[in-house]
Image 1 (cartoon, rainbow, N blue to C red):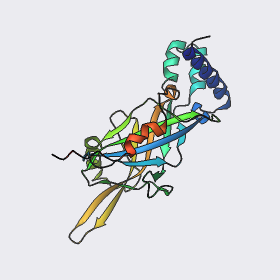
Image 2 (image 1 turned 120 degrees about the horizontal axis):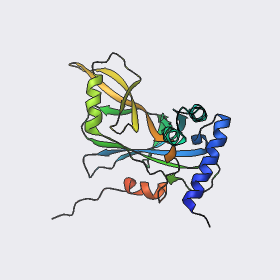
Image 3 (image 1 turned 180 degrees about the vertical axis):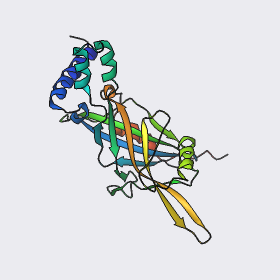
Image 4 (image 1 turned 90 degrees about the horizontal axis):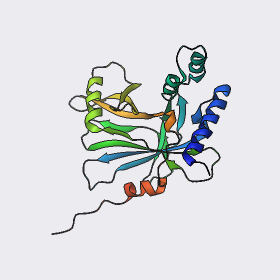
Length: 236
């Protein structure tokens, strides 16, 4: 028996070769599931957990044909072209979701989450799962971290206060793996006008070579701790 890792790499390489001819992307051959969790600073409070209704993959740097043409014309070596190919990034767009709360399950809506001004959120986390199209086995977790801490996104939101645009505003985490699309609204209170930022969609950036970087466990197993009731402190 050959090494499973080598067999997987050979299979992916063959598929990439076929895709180059068909002008398709590797991501088109996967089904995806994405979950979004808003973790609160108050540890006794359940996180707000959502399942994305449809994950839309889009290749951003699908330029493999031109890179290989450069190798043929000896513009650069195959080794350096391999490095370029590995930079191909898949955008995974998430515009609609549904709450995982038991009392509102199944209600799919456009993403519209009140993000600021508020100080109770600790971080936003996305969990990504995938499997080959047509595969009957459960979705497997992709080993990549998608996290946006409150301090990091609040700094960027402060810069957006002076922007004239009210929609299509974008902020990203330091790792540039998670992009939030923001709408800015102005609310009139009895005393003054208040600027409010709402989350309208999320986009994850995943290097193409991580599409098959699967870890152990299933979505149900990994999400179970997030859906359980917080443990109350023992009475003294």
